[in-house]
Length: 339
Ligand code: GDP
Ligand code: CA
Image 1 (cartoon, rainbow, N blue to C red):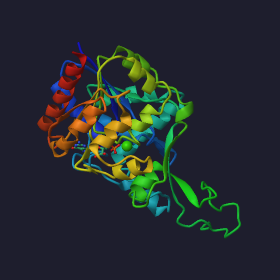
Image 2 (cartoon, rainbow, N blue to C red):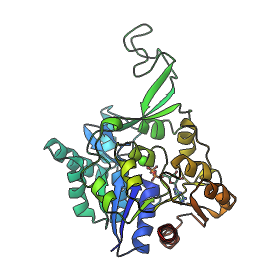
Image 3 (cartoon, rainbow, N blue to C red):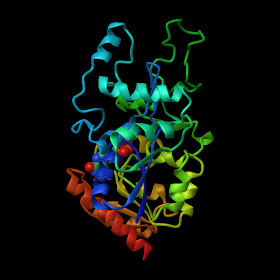
Image 4 (cartoon, rainbow, N blue to C red):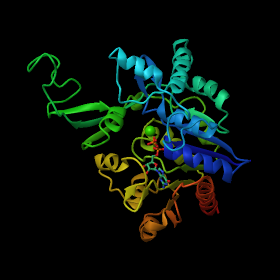
């Protein structure tokens, strides 16, 4: 039986996994999920990327939106707002709240996130083994220009000035605040996965990589999804040391992200928003194969010259069959690398 390990963010990762499950129904698939997007809201621990994978593969996702639950209502959020309790910019529906309550309750009782995720998956039966990248707290922060350096209620010169900022008039905000509240409309100067350098891979992560036949990078965000997972010490090394084909699919098509604002994140780390620049960013030390969209067929020679096998094919996850074809191509490129 083939063992496949996939590093996944939210929507891009989850949709790809659905195709992979169809393309390789007999494979044992382990997913290492990004937890750098996690946020504490209303006293609850919210894991957006793990939940997107779990709901998408478990049949509970809001299909058009790509995140959150289908048939959702927002009564709790409205009631919180009536008390003046926010943030209002993060969409938490009633059904989704239950997931976060169960998760937070189990964490308070002493269970690590990996055990909690396994318990939640008993309900959703995603058909893959879903592991958080780490049980430790990692929170991605984004450094932006401080729009209002002395905008605290106590006035200039008070202790609240530039809370979370630095002397250059910049301010670090939680990734979700940057992505959801600010909609990545301001430039990001840096992306920092706070806590990642101290984090340990969750139980099962290094073991899965050690036993893998193939490692896949779905078309997930290279900076704040896959980049964050690779920032957990030991994971990048385990992938490189596994000695098995590592194949990725480009989330950048025709010089732009298919969905979302990944270009902002790439700019923050000095990487161009092109399929070939993302491949070069991962590098031939990590990546053996790279799939680009047919729109980027012209980039194939450049990627190959960098020592990474490259193929161009349609990379739009428009439906399950199209996505399964992408997954099958990734697996066949992996076989080519192996041979
Ligand atoms: P997030 O955590 O919800 O942002 O999701 P991921 O990190 O897993 O994936 C986000 C990335 O998926 C974005 O950079 C998109 O460009 C990419 N993406 C979304 N849909 C598609 C698609 O149909 N094809 C390709 N190639 N990339 C996609
Ligand atoms: Ca995410």
